[in-house]
Image (cartoon, rainbow, N blue to C red; front, side, top):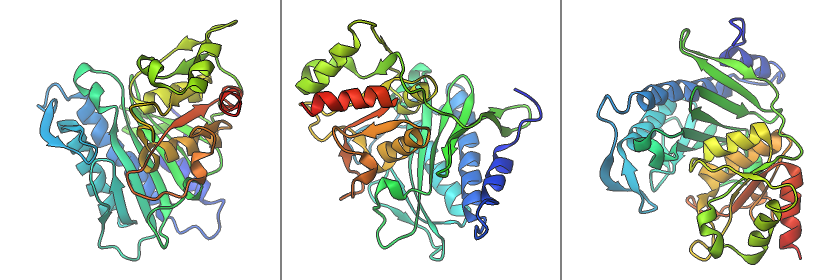
Length: 317
């Protein structure tokens, strides 16, 4: 990576200058999220050495086992974002109710999944953090299209911070030698068509027939390759860079879908669409959904326009 690459902070400040009325508060908030990501990344990379692997013995609101690193990541995000003084309320996938800070004049509400793919913790597979930022409104629950910024931090072979404030998507890679995120992927655009797909195909027999037919169509003529990492951040990042389609459709065991609208689907749909891709629940844009509850679930399919449009054709037959 070039040593003269622009830093994340410099990039955000330059973006801010495009808006004469910008206060700098969003810039500070984004940089604090990046700082939280650095702290989480350091513990991810040393999890086997500092006794932070394994389960806490607790269950979250979804009745899922909470890992020690889940709890650490969640506590880190809450602490760092509260200390930024820019957040009116925080909502996490790991806690049942929103957390309201004492900064009543703050402008923003942040939703986050502190450790996406946490089942990968104990086997050294990819992990991530997902975040979604809204302006404070009459309700904490707003449509995804109202997001002012969204992104993710990817803890893989390198640590990446990918975000959008509405005008393009940019990726930054953490340079450990200087402790800064440096611009490594400028103006990311998802390819119009890909050659890979991602889905938990072990559930194939539980999927709706149109979804099954779509998957089978991907295997005919010029077969697509299956890629699945059990971490939404890692999987979506792959499709963002290479094209193709990521799917977590509804099935007989999860008729309302499994992924969380506010914490996972909305921010990832925002990123993909700002990069020129498309997103669907089954037949509608998730960013248009008026959420009814904090931990609402939904099916999701997102990726290259060619594949998403083709999926929609099967479901409109």
